[in-house]
Image 1 (cartoon, rainbow, N blue to C red):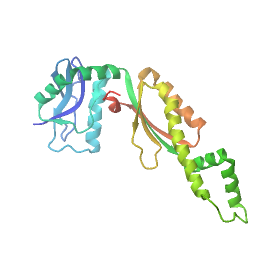
Image 2 (cartoon, rainbow, N blue to C red):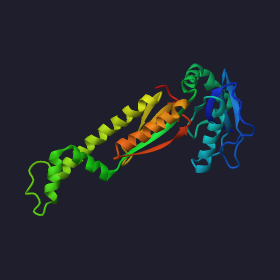
Image 3 (cartoon, rainbow, N blue to C red):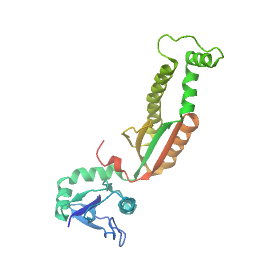
Image 4 (cartoon, rainbow, N blue to C red):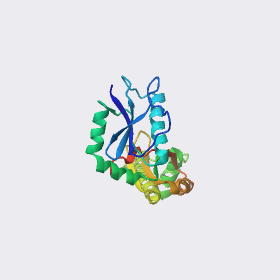
Length: 239
């Protein structure tokens, strides 16, 4: 049977008794050793599916194993032909995995998704540009404006908002980066300014979260969604 891999840890890592992994019924988790490392593994179901139950089970294994020290968490769906292949991979990449485990020790990931409040950002760009504000006021007057020459008011506002988006991504990253050991930029989604992952030392968690709260208080047009602490999936590879 194929081997499902949850993560990688030092060889002296002890798993909690009878920890269960993915599958229905859940597969018991074991360790596979390669040098000074172990992989957290179970038998792989015939067709692993990214269903909520299995996603949570995968996360649970990584979190439980990380209670006593760092774990290199693997993304859901990592399957190897057998235990022997897993052990061979651990030996082949041994030094790299050891280096990454040291880099992640005592740290967790916090993910931050940033959006604009559309109405608030419109007020912000108008307030920053007296000419735009004047055109906005003229457009609301009873007689309105005459025929426009050059870019329309709407086009100018769209350009101003686009500039503000770029500036705000820089602002968020520059403000929060000092509280993190590393930052990874994720892909921008529809309607989202930024998807940022921060590697935060555990004794600086509250500093980081307080900095997020202060950022929102000082820039009311920003909307931030923080998720964490999480296993450091975004930082398994060396930056």
